[in-house]
Image (tube, rainbow, N blue to C red; front, side, top):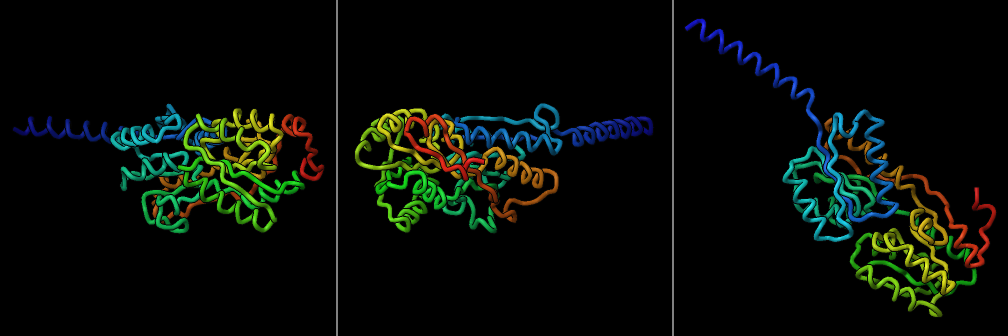
Length: 316
């Protein structure tokens, strides 16, 4: 009997040892759902991955990142969110508002970080941006919309009427457009809404603006950003300058912006992820964060096509 007890004790000790090793070498699982592919969101994701790497979290080594792209479809966001939640990942990153809402609606337990979400509070992701009070927090891509309207006025001084081009179902765009409209009122500009509900409508809507407006303003709208090649092609042909919400949209053919760096936004989100995974911080107690700096960028080819001279003091 003593011999049997000794064998059992030894076996338990060995199992405990292996259990301890597995705990120490546990691979952290991070699920990612991104709404759609376009330069801003792609840069945000890459910044997140690089930021984790800088902190010692390397995909394929001590973490496993399950990256999923919804290809711009809300239904896909929900399907992907269901998978990530059922996988019981240690943390989920949601890139863009619809993706964030899909995840937040399915779990109150898994820590969720969002990025490229303009206002988490109005999107009902948190109780307040200062004190989330939920399992969700992250970084906002709120851009200086008023400053962008001032930029429009400076680059197109004779402009009197502006079209607000955005997707009618994106809450983040409504939030920004409201700010832009207030800035237009102060600048003496009139405006009209030019909304789309799917990508197939974009070309026709932009074409309809020819002869009706002097400029187009488009905020950091995911649908418009993913189709900037179409927007710029039609707008440039009609000689309508397009002021946009971020640099990726400028690279896609927009005239200019004064906006944030999405790569740096992603890296900032990674710092928050480390605080959760390593330091045990709770999203409920972590305020939504913002980038403190913005950059001017313009598209040289578009400016040339439109015959617009960029003031020297803006080019550094």
